[in-house]
Length: 199
Image 1 (cartoon, one colour):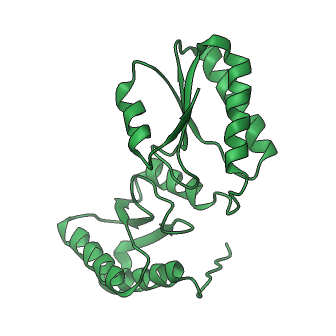
Image 2 (cartoon, helix red, strand yellow):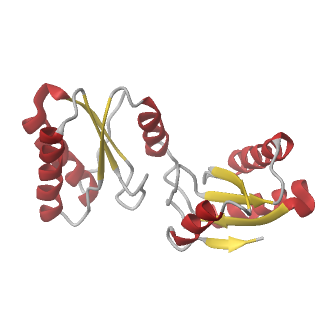
């Protein structure tokens, strides 16, 4: 696997220094780290995943110390999660975000097209579509689709709409479908990055 770091970037210099400090303090207990493309893109409010063999209080303190030292030195901010290699779900989600496209210039157009297709496919069942600003994610998703009735047919139609948009645009639609009764998720989407909304 190729590794290309833009060392003119403050973010990648910060990540490189973070990795060095982690290796110095954790040695063979450090399995790998996954850094997202920039410090603005986050997963559960984090932009670096630290994967270790054994996780305990001492390890957590060493990672915290490394992040603190890096954040004092660079403009970019390291915000991390620590987990073990057994946490396959978190690792896979971080991997997917790390390989997201760098070009999000057509994000607004992609969201508009997604909303247009959903309106057509779901008819009156579509309540609203909430989307986060480009490169922001919540629960591994950047779009929340709210419907009145949710069943397998609705789920398949939303999946079809996302597939069609993702094939057409450089930006990526990663969605969650829920109903208007799911107030907690809707409110979190509204608050995260002050989600834009439309119906």
